[in-house]
Image (cartoon, rainbow, N blue to C red; front, side):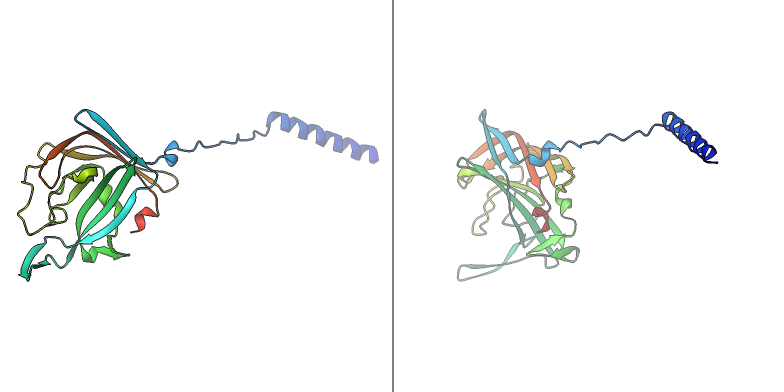
Length: 235
């Protein structure tokens, strides 16, 4: 009986070994995903003035989010004090990105008016979908930013007081005429979301910037990259 039992065990082991040879266990290779190099990117902007290229970069550039009165107008002037009003059910929302190094500074401001009922209360009123500001496509330059606040779009200011928009003072007529940015363009060409939740925005642009004396310069071959992490996007 013992010999028969041992013989049975041997036969079972033989067939088990044969099955293993016919159906070998294939272990899946360990795949190590390469980290996206854009996770280490930082904000940068470059442009040319009179053939000279200016490059400015910074690891973190989000500066501020603000609410302004859209469609501002002077209601009255009392003892040199200007009383301003506008559309009551809406707010002009702006996000400013300040990029600076080596004494150079550039601010890029995203501007859009929203109905208050469609906004959330944070430190300021903010759009429910903040990424609405950054969709791919072209933007106008808001010539009346900080003054009438009627136009949506983009505003840029650089060192030495040059900017794409006019004076904010109601004490004087508007500084810029309607075609001040006639041949200018700002286009968001790419908006990519990384696995970390960070967004990478890229844009190309050209513009004309003015100072308080109405002297002007052309910004040409402009390129912008913004790195917007989830903490930047809560205001």
